[in-house]
Image 1 (cartoon, one colour):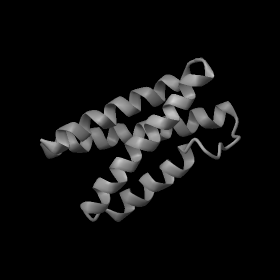
Image 2: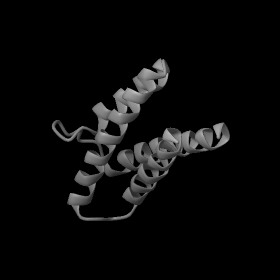
Image 3: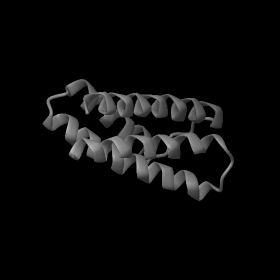
Image 4: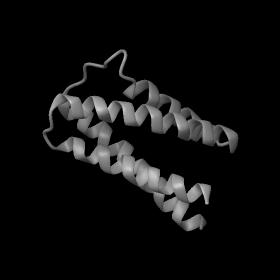
Length: 101
């Protein structure tokens, strides 16, 4: 049952990231940062408990990338690429969780 919850977390965060491709007020992108930091922190903890160290390291990297304290001044097009890559990774995780069950 727990993996079922994470399956939906992957898909919701992926959708939120893909919506970044459209133009929204700046507060939406701050919301995205907060959602990503919280979600990937939870994922990193879960992966660490499951001894999946590569996924733990990737999750921690994404937390550091999206953290809202020190903002990385990357152009919008680069952020769009990052958002799409992370969303694709999350959709893969969604697919992986679906295949497990």
